[in-house]
Image 1 (cartoon, rainbow, N blue to C red):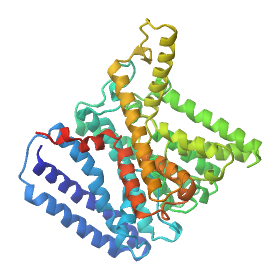
Image 2 (tube, one colour):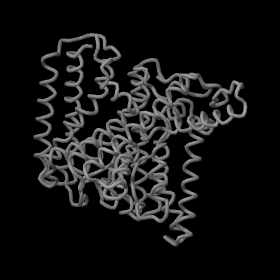
Image 3 (cartoon, rainbow, N blue to C red):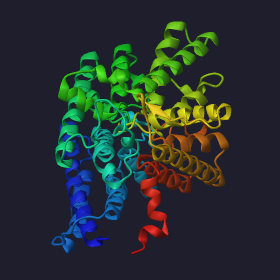
Length: 482
């Protein structure tokens, strides 16, 4: 393990990250919102902090081991979350405590979208822009992490199955070099953001709102520049654009790469994960529409409109809102939160356990039922017409069990701090699935819960974004043994 090299890399990352404070400074100048000093001071603090980490180890150069990769990956999110909180603490209009500022920063970078802020409409434009920018940068980091970095660490999640499955994406690195992969992903990510921004602008948003919401839509983050979120605009065209780009961003970016490279979209409809993902969305929309219509919560046309938006928003873990789904009748709030456990597809900006894992768990469950009838039969689990290795199935079950165990422990911990069961259950779901909105005491925002609960939820956001094992492995004695 090369601690000096790790510190040098993290120092460089912090210094580069400090440059992201320049765009909000320009916004502060344009709108003269009085927050420019906060960003100037934050820029100085972050630059000096990164320099202090980098300078003592600037000459250290070694090849990084797998263990180094784990530490850098975890520190990437946690350290940047720490430095990203500085502007929130220094801005007078926000005046957040350290805990609240860190919560807001981590929520942005992990694209969770859970906020402790109220009266968002009255905040300085530069702070609003900065929140959205954090999500956009975090979303890109997620894609590069999932497609390029995690496979190198041997924790590529469902990239394993693609090597065994016929189809367009057999090489999880997409291109032979990580640098080329990251560059290709940046092109795709930036292009989707630009198209989303233009769509919003043409549909009636101001240019500022269009930029900000395109950042959080493509990142599947959920932050908005308004307390009422997308519902502020009350515009069906804007909602339709948002739904389309949430679905696109929740699909595996390796498939987008193939579409970009080969100018074809047929492979989307041949991918088993995408087909199952669309099936989940259609079922949720259908059930929500029927229940809202039958209970006379809305007129049937409005029921369909709100059902489409909220179902896609929650299922993809974006967390935007056009209606208060927590007050919907019967089982609908619970149903929508449950869909967030599946989340987006593997190697997308969506959260949750990932659709492909849920699909494989269902296939494995069906195989066990078949084995009861035919105990001596050899029944493989197939995906895309090809049998999967047993180690892939075991890895999925290992992830599923760890995910649920972490969920239960965090929920009990939150209840121990005094939160009621519904609030605790949904707060863990909202953060571990990187969803954002919850039920009960966190249906509007997370500002009212106590500080120990916020710290646990910060840990939950990191666990969800790093797919549990990447962070948990650091707590094992074996990891630190020479």
